[in-house]
Length: 144
Image (cartoon, rainbow, N blue to C red; front, side, top):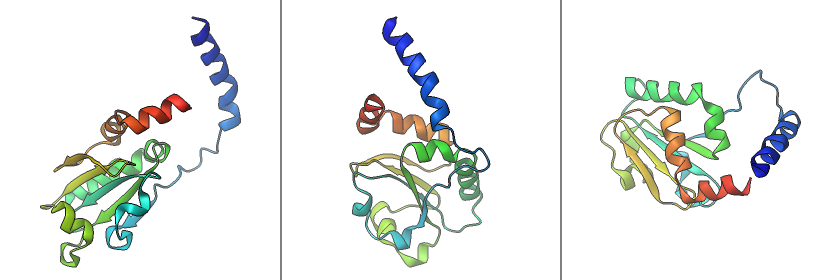
């Protein structure tokens, strides 16, 4: 009980110091997959969410981008970088590695392991839950 009370009190006093302006959410870093090169540059720094589509006009792609824009803060809190590949003609390194057929969503952890592959759009809430189950994320939450 004392530990819980101490946590609640410390959270209450810490939150005003962490307040930010509410004007606009921070943008999720988004990179074209062709510009990303290999994923080793993100290793142990960021989680990578790769979104594949055959064209930017794909309804599943626009739905996924809408989900991301609606809850940007959740992805920023989890150190997520979004890579977008909407041109199958370029045959990027990521396309060769993951071989998507149409729309595909891939979540890669900070350790470089693939944790999620989905053929349909996922809401950020579902993505966040998957991230929160990862061992490295659990360690991050314990250390905060």
